[in-house]
Image 1: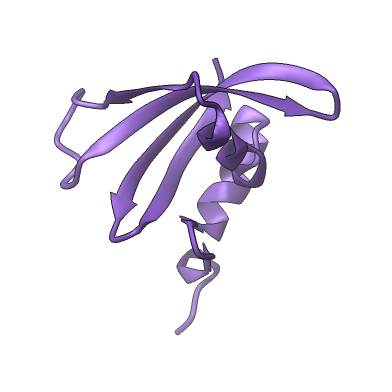
Image 2: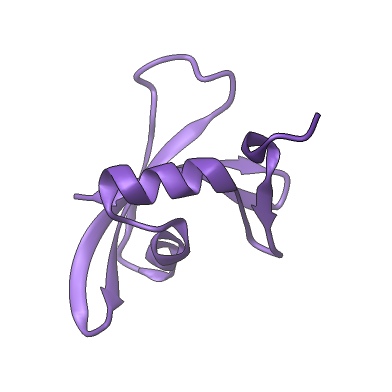
Length: 93
């Protein structure tokens, strides 16, 4: 049986679970589409997330986004799978 939880977004650079992205927007007010822009911030800071064993290396990117003329800082939790960045969570800093 195919569930909504199984749907994935993927392009040449990024991937994420569609349900998790929808839940993140509801809970944190930041879409993954918007959060991916933080990776373009040349002044962004990437910090390993070592709070627990996630079964893979995870990182927190603190980066700036200008969206609709409004600048804001986001924290994007992510991992790398092959050549792609998998977004796990995004929220305003």
